[in-house]
Length: 596
Image (cartoon, rainbow, N blue to C red; front, side, top):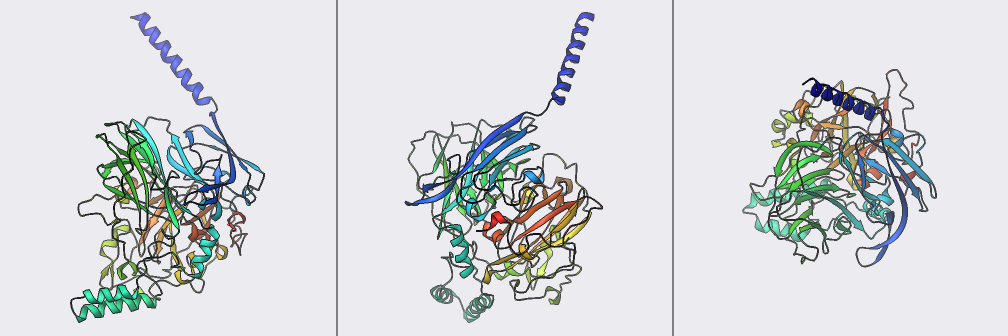
């Protein structure tokens, strides 16, 4: 007995000593060398210039381990400056990879130069990396990141596949932007015509209904908007891809019947929201934006630009299953397939669901400035021309509306009236699915354990999403990036951002370097995300865990919106430090690497 006890005690001491040595040892370095080059790819039958990483389009997967140090050397062999931003990763501001924001990286990676990114890996999950400029990101500089956790996953799976959604256009990205500035509906092939009007009038049951149709047409005409304008850039120029493959020749992801297959869904599109479903299979969502959640079984999910979702499926039959990603505006498909063999015949795509159409109810959120602090060093005013959709309609003058007293928290939306119409739910997703279909909502995203950093916000700032669709101007609080002051936050505070979307477009808002927490009424069980989608005509409170010192990019992740001004500096300072200049140092232009 004594001998056994002594041996066990000695083993325990040895185990403890080994553990202490492991803790004291420096983190292992995981090294990658990436080379950026311009090469030709053929997507639509004609060779076009693309941006490749190590000769690949899209770029290669980077796999890291939580707790290690990442050392990634990026060499730019192109003729213009470039960059790589590590989307969703928590790291020092200098390593974030967004040109124009951090000292030492103001112009990105110059032609012929090599830049070494070096940062600790402090998280796990599915993320991605991409260039932070219009030309290179749209032409292929994007790829997945998978970070293996320090602890075993809290869910089981037998194999995994990355499903990276994106788009390709044969047009140069600058030409696409110029076309949008000339005519914001340039790529909208679904615009309503006189023939559509005649068809609607002919189908109306009586004169009253016909009058209502005409009033609706006149109202949209007065706003110079179209209710079918769901996406700025559509299948009129885009070809939609999965892992670089066209829907006609889809990527084949192998499985054995009965296996649990983890699919890492990444929306690397520049402008496209996708509605994802796998006919014949339920999807169990286990991660959102890299963070584990309580598993939730759904039939469909909408993935906003730059979001990631991890789902587990279990195909039991020896047959093919289509992973269908239908664009939100119904102008195209991305597609991959789960199959038991590579040479399985390609199945036909199903018909598109009916295209969505905006209603006046979607456009009723138009408060204008609410008087809240904007977080800027000096007071600021909206720039002229950043008109809200309803032509300056004042909610405060509407019967029953006390806008000054109205809370914008999520829980108030169900009861918020807008001239007899109910405001849309800020987090519901209407994919056009048949009745009874379970569609994922942000409310389904609950972490496995309570957030230890949760507390009431220290202060609230207002962030109105604004712009002028007719002129293709996009802004935050009525100011484009090159006119705007930085938003200044204090290191360690919990800042609540009250997003108010005054536009007719969805905006996937992304803050670099810090987590955002949408307030869904669940307190410490609200999810952490790196992208939060703000639906048209809605308001949503989102808390920021302010724990990254320095200057960070804060922007809409619709690439052409960001390039047209919907971006801010988010400056994090210590208590007592000056807020620095009231306006960004590059006032009058985008950061250097964002120039076209």
